[in-house]
Image 1 (tube, rainbow, N blue to C red):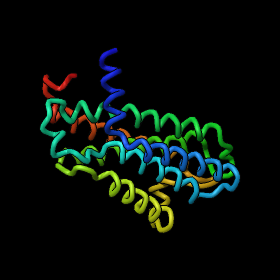
Image 2: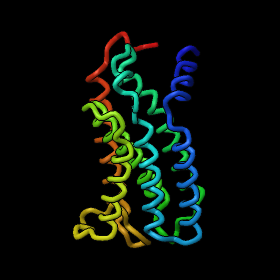
Image 3: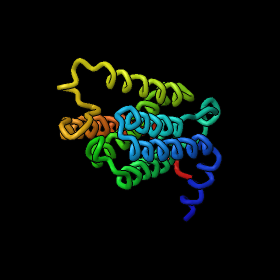
Image 4: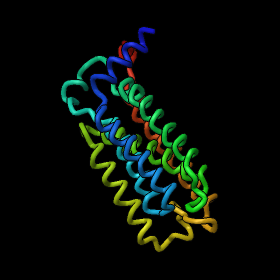
Length: 203
Protein backbone atom coordinates (compact mmCIF):
# COMPACT_ATOMS: atom_id res chain seq x y z
CA UNK A 1 0.00 0.00 0.00
CA UNK A 2 2.83 2.38 0.90
CA UNK A 3 4.58 1.65 -2.38
CA UNK A 4 1.35 2.28 -4.33
CA UNK A 5 0.84 5.65 -2.63
CA UNK A 6 4.47 6.55 -3.26
CA UNK A 7 4.05 5.68 -6.94
CA UNK A 8 0.85 7.71 -7.17
CA UNK A 9 2.49 10.79 -5.64
CA UNK A 10 5.46 10.33 -7.95
CA UNK A 11 3.27 10.11 -11.06
CA UNK A 12 1.29 13.21 -10.11
CA UNK A 13 4.51 15.18 -9.67
CA UNK A 14 6.60 14.07 -12.63
CA UNK A 15 4.40 12.71 -15.42
CA UNK A 16 3.43 15.13 -18.21
CA UNK A 17 -0.27 14.49 -17.70
CA UNK A 18 -1.49 16.98 -20.35
CA UNK A 19 0.85 15.38 -22.91
CA UNK A 20 -0.35 11.93 -21.91
CA UNK A 21 -4.00 12.94 -22.22
CA UNK A 22 -3.39 14.63 -25.58
CA UNK A 23 -1.49 11.61 -26.91
CA UNK A 24 -4.15 9.11 -25.86
CA UNK A 25 -6.89 11.29 -27.34
CA UNK A 26 -4.94 11.81 -30.57
CA UNK A 27 -4.28 8.10 -31.01
CA UNK A 28 -7.96 7.34 -30.38
CA UNK A 29 -9.04 9.87 -33.00
CA UNK A 30 -6.60 8.43 -35.53
CA UNK A 31 -7.89 4.90 -34.91
CA UNK A 32 -11.44 6.12 -35.48
CA UNK A 33 -10.32 7.74 -38.73
CA UNK A 34 -8.68 4.49 -39.82
CA UNK A 35 -11.99 2.77 -39.12
CA UNK A 36 -13.77 5.24 -41.41
CA UNK A 37 -11.07 5.80 -44.04
CA UNK A 38 -8.63 2.88 -44.11
CA UNK A 39 -5.24 4.38 -44.96
CA UNK A 40 -1.66 3.38 -44.27
CA UNK A 41 -0.59 6.91 -43.31
CA UNK A 42 -3.35 7.18 -40.71
CA UNK A 43 -2.22 3.86 -39.25
CA UNK A 44 1.38 5.11 -39.20
CA UNK A 45 0.32 8.39 -37.58
CA UNK A 46 -1.45 6.50 -34.80
CA UNK A 47 1.66 4.42 -34.09
CA UNK A 48 3.80 7.56 -34.17
CA UNK A 49 1.55 9.42 -31.71
CA UNK A 50 1.62 6.44 -29.33
CA UNK A 51 5.42 6.25 -29.51
CA UNK A 52 5.85 10.00 -29.12
CA UNK A 53 3.62 10.04 -26.06
CA UNK A 54 5.54 7.16 -24.48
CA UNK A 55 8.89 8.83 -25.04
CA UNK A 56 7.79 11.90 -23.08
CA UNK A 57 6.90 9.75 -20.07
CA UNK A 58 10.59 9.05 -19.45
CA UNK A 59 11.87 12.63 -19.56
CA UNK A 60 13.40 14.03 -16.38
CA UNK A 61 13.53 17.84 -16.77
CA UNK A 62 14.94 18.23 -13.24
CA UNK A 63 17.60 15.56 -13.78
CA UNK A 64 20.41 17.70 -12.37
CA UNK A 65 18.67 17.56 -8.99
CA UNK A 66 16.79 14.26 -9.14
CA UNK A 67 19.81 12.22 -10.23
CA UNK A 68 21.58 13.13 -6.98
CA UNK A 69 18.76 11.86 -4.76
CA UNK A 70 18.67 8.36 -3.14
CA UNK A 71 15.85 7.16 -5.39
CA UNK A 72 17.86 5.82 -8.32
CA UNK A 73 17.11 5.96 -12.00
CA UNK A 74 16.11 2.30 -12.08
CA UNK A 75 13.28 2.97 -9.56
CA UNK A 76 12.09 6.02 -11.48
CA UNK A 77 12.19 4.13 -14.76
CA UNK A 78 10.18 1.21 -13.39
CA UNK A 79 7.63 3.65 -11.96
CA UNK A 80 7.21 5.23 -15.39
CA UNK A 81 6.88 1.84 -17.06
CA UNK A 82 3.46 1.45 -15.42
CA UNK A 83 1.77 4.34 -17.30
CA UNK A 84 3.66 3.27 -20.43
CA UNK A 85 2.17 -0.22 -20.05
CA UNK A 86 -1.29 1.31 -19.60
CA UNK A 87 -0.74 3.34 -22.77
CA UNK A 88 0.21 0.15 -24.63
CA UNK A 89 -2.87 -1.63 -23.27
CA UNK A 90 -5.07 1.28 -24.35
CA UNK A 91 -3.61 1.12 -27.87
CA UNK A 92 -4.17 -2.63 -28.13
CA UNK A 93 -7.73 -2.28 -26.83
CA UNK A 94 -8.45 0.57 -29.24
CA UNK A 95 -7.19 -1.42 -32.21
CA UNK A 96 -9.31 -4.40 -31.19
CA UNK A 97 -12.42 -2.20 -31.28
CA UNK A 98 -11.75 -0.79 -34.75
CA UNK A 99 -12.55 -2.50 -38.04
CA UNK A 100 -9.18 -2.96 -39.75
CA UNK A 101 -10.18 -5.19 -42.65
CA UNK A 102 -9.37 -2.46 -45.17
CA UNK A 103 -5.91 -1.94 -43.69
CA UNK A 104 -4.68 -5.30 -42.42
CA UNK A 105 -4.55 -7.54 -39.39
CA UNK A 106 -5.69 -6.10 -36.08
CA UNK A 107 -3.25 -8.20 -34.05
CA UNK A 108 -0.23 -6.96 -36.00
CA UNK A 109 -1.36 -3.33 -35.93
CA UNK A 110 -1.81 -3.66 -32.18
CA UNK A 111 1.69 -5.15 -31.93
CA UNK A 112 3.12 -2.28 -34.01
CA UNK A 113 1.86 0.32 -31.56
CA UNK A 114 2.85 -1.64 -28.46
CA UNK A 115 6.34 -2.29 -29.85
CA UNK A 116 6.74 1.36 -30.85
CA UNK A 117 5.85 2.39 -27.29
CA UNK A 118 8.41 -0.03 -25.84
CA UNK A 119 11.01 1.06 -28.40
CA UNK A 120 10.48 4.73 -27.55
CA UNK A 121 10.81 3.91 -23.87
CA UNK A 122 14.03 1.99 -24.51
CA UNK A 123 15.69 4.72 -26.56
CA UNK A 124 14.67 7.47 -24.15
CA UNK A 125 15.86 5.47 -21.14
CA UNK A 126 19.22 4.76 -22.78
CA UNK A 127 19.69 8.47 -23.52
CA UNK A 128 18.72 9.33 -19.95
CA UNK A 129 21.34 6.91 -18.70
CA UNK A 130 23.87 8.82 -20.83
CA UNK A 131 23.02 12.11 -19.21
CA UNK A 132 20.34 13.66 -21.42
CA UNK A 133 17.65 15.08 -19.18
CA UNK A 134 14.69 15.27 -21.57
CA UNK A 135 15.28 13.47 -24.87
CA UNK A 136 11.64 12.41 -25.25
CA UNK A 137 10.57 15.01 -27.81
CA UNK A 138 13.58 14.33 -30.02
CA UNK A 139 13.08 10.57 -29.74
CA UNK A 140 9.37 10.73 -30.59
CA UNK A 141 9.92 13.11 -33.51
CA UNK A 142 12.86 11.10 -34.80
CA UNK A 143 10.93 7.84 -34.68
CA UNK A 144 8.01 9.38 -36.58
CA UNK A 145 10.33 10.78 -39.27
CA UNK A 146 12.16 7.47 -39.70
CA UNK A 147 8.98 5.42 -39.83
CA UNK A 148 7.38 7.83 -42.29
CA UNK A 149 10.45 7.62 -44.52
CA UNK A 150 10.30 3.83 -44.41
CA UNK A 151 6.66 3.95 -45.48
CA UNK A 152 7.17 6.44 -48.30
CA UNK A 153 10.56 5.28 -49.61
CA UNK A 154 11.57 1.80 -48.57
CA UNK A 155 13.66 0.03 -51.21
CA UNK A 156 13.85 -3.00 -48.90
CA UNK A 157 10.10 -3.28 -48.39
CA UNK A 158 10.14 -6.94 -49.41
CA UNK A 159 12.61 -7.74 -46.61
CA UNK A 160 11.63 -5.00 -44.13
CA UNK A 161 7.81 -5.08 -44.03
CA UNK A 162 7.37 -2.74 -41.08
CA UNK A 163 4.05 -1.40 -42.35
CA UNK A 164 2.39 -3.83 -44.76
CA UNK A 165 -0.96 -2.79 -46.15
CA UNK A 166 -3.99 -4.75 -47.31
CA UNK A 167 -4.65 -8.45 -47.46
CA UNK A 168 -1.51 -9.35 -49.41
CA UNK A 169 1.09 -7.72 -47.14
CA UNK A 170 3.67 -9.69 -45.18
CA UNK A 171 1.88 -9.40 -41.87
CA UNK A 172 3.69 -12.33 -40.27
CA UNK A 173 7.03 -10.77 -41.18
CA UNK A 174 5.92 -7.44 -39.74
CA UNK A 175 4.83 -9.10 -36.50
CA UNK A 176 8.20 -10.80 -36.17
CA UNK A 177 10.14 -7.60 -36.78
CA UNK A 178 8.15 -5.50 -34.32
CA UNK A 179 8.29 -8.25 -31.68
CA UNK A 180 12.07 -8.46 -32.07
CA UNK A 181 12.40 -4.67 -31.79
CA UNK A 182 10.33 -4.68 -28.60
CA UNK A 183 12.46 -7.47 -27.11
CA UNK A 184 15.67 -5.54 -27.80
CA UNK A 185 14.13 -2.40 -26.30
CA UNK A 186 13.12 -4.28 -23.13
CA UNK A 187 16.67 -5.60 -22.77
CA UNK A 188 17.96 -2.04 -23.22
CA UNK A 189 15.65 -0.78 -20.48
CA UNK A 190 16.69 -3.64 -18.17
CA UNK A 191 20.37 -2.96 -18.83
CA UNK A 192 19.99 0.76 -18.17
CA UNK A 193 18.13 0.09 -14.93
CA UNK A 194 20.47 -2.58 -13.58
CA UNK A 195 23.48 -0.39 -14.30
CA UNK A 196 22.34 2.16 -11.74
CA UNK A 197 20.64 -0.02 -9.17
CA UNK A 198 21.58 0.27 -5.49
CA UNK A 199 19.91 -0.94 -2.29
CA UNK A 200 18.97 2.53 -0.93
CA UNK A 201 16.60 3.22 -3.84
CA UNK A 202 13.37 1.92 -2.30
CA UNK A 203 11.01 4.44 -0.72
